[in-house]
Length: 190
Ligand SMILES: Cc1cc2nc3c(=O)[nH]c(=O)nc-3n(C[C@H](O)[C@H](O)[C@H](O)COP(=O)(O)O)c2cc1C
Image 1 (cartoon, rainbow, N blue to C red):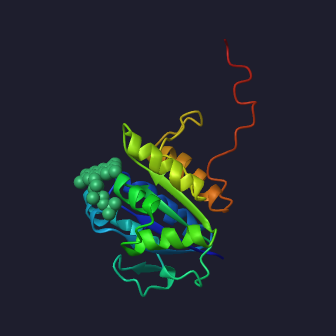
Image 2 (cartoon, rainbow, N blue to C red; image 1 turned 90 degrees about the horizontal axis):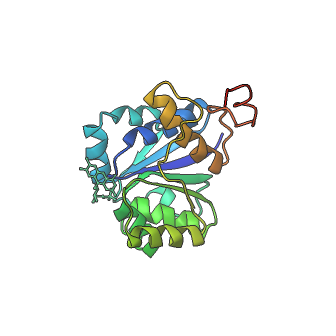
């Protein structure tokens, strides 16, 4: 069992956060949540408050006394999912001006896994430069770009194609999306 932080911001796609937390819990891990104020509003608007059902602990986004604000806490990693361009910029600039951004900063300084799932389109140059910056600092950027070649039959299955990548880069084996074997297209008429 490992402990993970799931940070949720005011970008669209709260379902990604719900399913990351749901699968982590299902696989026996513990989730600590940090949700920004816009994150909570968008989560509510998108009907995803069940996210909290999968969290062992929820930290106030202004509580710098929280355990995860310190590098000494034994968290295995953090996912910021979905990540707004505002929070991406704050992480890239090292502002540490709320607990979510501070905890991401801690993950980078402690060389822990930090997965960032940006959600915006199109990107401007500032967004792209911020993604480069966090990548250089050690984060893995996994855009909310679901894949269709597994032929998902529901929104949940489609969302899980992104969630599977997030879990993989957190070091969690999930098995929720079958790996591509190369044999999938054999026998399909050309
Ligand atoms: C319904 C809704 C959807 C939004 N979707 C996005 C989005 O996909 N990406 C983004 O960067 N901002 C999005 N925003 C704007 C952010 O919520 C806003 O920039 C906010 O300040 C982000 O704050 P945070 O990073 O502290 O959560 C959305 C806002 C609303 C109300």
